[in-house]
Image (cartoon, rainbow, N blue to C red; front, side, top):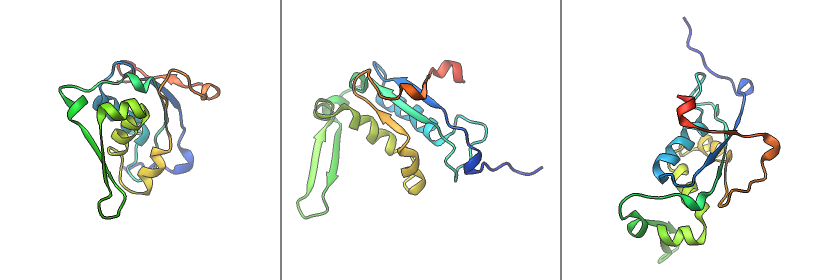
Length: 146
């Protein structure tokens, strides 16, 4: 029996809609990363982009557990001496709530060109409005999929 390997041209892509209101950041990011990679499909192949598109709404409603709201710090560096910047989770949520979800999901994807390609299929919106109605996204419920 031969091992099945998915081909890029035979992958069918769906659009999923996930409401982030009241969900925990890490658990939500894990679910999103699995859908983007295609791990929820039987034809998953690690070196082929078999994932689906994900539209996340209500990003401003995510939560974190414990004292992470004040203690979690995001760092970035410009590459120049003294170019280290930091921002807390609370400040990041006030500035741009989409970035918290994007950073969490990006860290769970492969750190290569395949991961970059999969990350482009993630669409995050702070409110409940999104411009992807024409794609007819399916509301994602974990209980129905498993």
